[in-house]
Image (tube, rainbow, N blue to C red; front, side, top):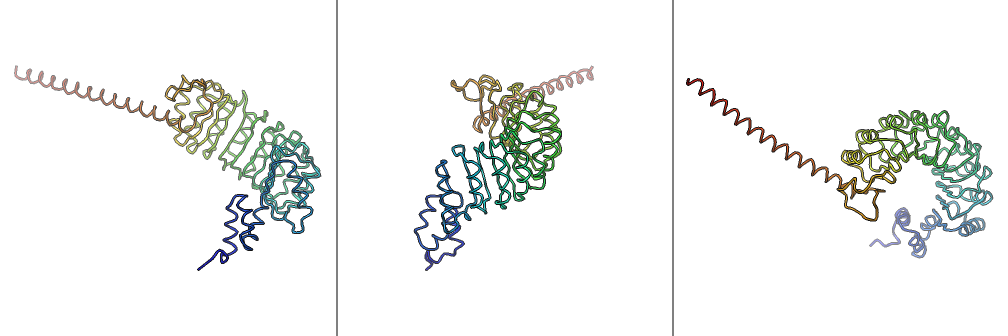
Length: 382
């Protein structure tokens, strides 16, 4: 009979990879095979809740005899963790096989520590940096990370409109430039057109997105599935409709604070058959009827954001009333189904009325026909 000691190493490693961190730790004590398989998994993504835990990790890696840093594949530093140049430089040299690096509080990181990322992390696939004062020089070197697929450079104020140029040869699929004010149509949008693998593009709170910017992207980015933008008075129907018509693959769409009307909603309903999530919050020129038509025709829609759209509960009475929320913020699939059922029942009633009217008309025609025949027969007799 096969026992746990007889399991192949590949099976043991697979078991360990599927477990949560506490269970992985328990595997260390099962037997020699599980011990060997669980160690790389325990180090794969260190849990770092505080700046102190980061300091302890660096200290541990520096004093380890077994180069545990080789096992680390993912390093995610949340908003609660502060890190400066010297600490990041020290870490990069100890984790050569890193694939995911996320730093959400990078205010103290400059070109000094960001430029070497491409030197030490040859296998990097995901890079997220928020709030760094890095310059274009860093972008130039980051473009050498040839395995990069997901890139976030959010709220990095010192970058330039040509920041995307060094990444033209990378197969970037996810790009997030939220909070960056340096985007331009003449440089950034043109360089963005070369990102032919891009499936997700996020441009929230950029303040510099113009109609020309969107016109450059019309016809480009053929794989795009998720698009998020914060607009302004110039992002109206004329700016967004041509873009939507050339991106039928979109499944998630965020058009925040745009000057769009029901015309854009009609195009969304007719051109985006796979749309699942839509957020049109802070778009104030939309009507309840436009919302109804959208929901009715977008049968795959599961979430609709309407915050500050001035769509009140009374405007959509088919949805159960909530006294605590006089205006809609978000419609989940439950509320959307209420609307669809209401519209379906309305059409069914209308169809019945039409059938009744047709039957009455048919009866009237039959009666008229019979009367005419009797009249003709009478005339023939005379």
